[in-house]
Structure formats: C-alpha cells, structure tokens
Length: 268
Image 1 (cartoon, rainbow, N blue to C red):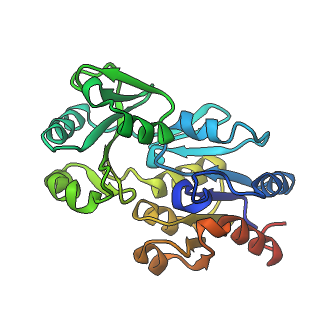
Image 2 (tube, rainbow, N blue to C red):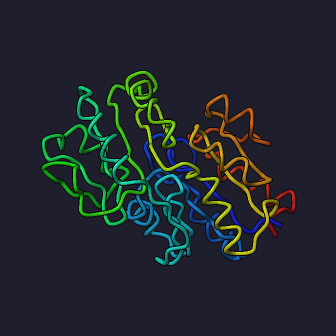
C-alpha cells in the first residue's frame, strides 16, 4: 500500500494561476485519515513551500530546493550542500549574461544582487522564495549553498542559459527546472536522491510510494518510486519514463491520480 505521495508543484499540483487546486483540502484530509504522507517536492525554497500549505492543518513532508533540503515538522531530514567556490564561480559567469538573473540558494535565505532586484525579477522570485536577502555582491555570501538558480525572463533557459553553463557539468549537475529556470547542484543531488533518503529514514519501499511530475528536474523522482505519474502537460521525456499518465495541472491531474490510486485499492 502507498504510504507517501511526492508531488511537484509548478505545472503539476498547482493550477494555471499557481494556486493549490479546488478539492485539495478534502483530498489532503482523506490522505491523512488513511495514514498517507503528502510530500510537496519542488525547486521552491522550504519557507515558500511551507507558506503555500499554511492553510492546511495536515503534516506534510517537504522536498525543497529540488530535493537538496528535506524537512518534516520543521525538522531537517536530509540536506545536500554544494561547493561554495563553484557556486560563486557560476554566479560570476551569470553576471556576464545580459538580462539573466542568479540566486544563491542558501541554508538560511535566498540571496540576490541588489542591482538585479528589479520589479520583474522580484515578482517572479517571490513566487518561489519568500525568504530573500539583497546583497551588494554574491561573493562571500554569509551562508552555505544548496544550489544556484538562474532565471531567464524570456522563457528560453534552454538556449539563453544552459549552453553557457554546460562547461560546469564536469563538476556539478546542471538541470532545466522549467522554461524560465535552470538549477545547478552538486552531483547526485536531485529529487530522486531526496526520495531515497526519505525512504531510508522512514523505512518505506519504492512500491509504497507514488510521484507526480511534469519537467526534467522530476526525472530522478520518477525513477525512485513504483507509481510514477506524468502530467498530460509534461515534458515528453517525463512521459516516456513515467509508468502512468494523468490529466494536466489545469484539470486537477494530481487529485485525479490520487483518487485513481484510492479506487484501485492502493491507498486504503
């Protein structure tokens, strides 16, 4: 029987307006009654994820920062730091890229350059980072990085960011998180590694887990569970590796997938 459900946020659980879908409160309460833990799994900051689910009384397990930070009941379950020197080197490269914005994602806050904290970027940033700090420079940040996030406002991160950071792939993991965002983390740091750490901590097997995702940074998470669901709006590669498909995020695909698991007796 399924004991944990991992779900990506943007493009997966959240609707077109970035909101938790109608009916989530009832499904979350039903899962809690059945003893199933729901685990939002996102590139978002932990504080942002926690704030998103503040209206709901259930205890959730949070896989934040693409799985580099995992917390349950505000207690750290798992964390994966990246080398600070490499993070600073990547951000220095980003500074040379016009109209591209970098974030030093630390253990205490998300850090951005003061001169880049312009309205368009600020509004986008605060969708994913509710705890941010402005600094004159991202060198010698008083924190340790879990990842570096890079934002392209034109929605072409695959061509405007990735080609210029590919050279770092021999030292770190570079992955597209969406059309606008690219994340850089230490080797082996991803949602799948976080899922496996959770499974080990809680003594839960892959066939007791389900996962929902839509983009390339969900790849490893799909492979770490038995019941993997691609959204109808998912990237083609995610559809290839997921065992099941559900409706799109705008049609409440995660909730429909969970109800399907209940109907099939995999959640009791």
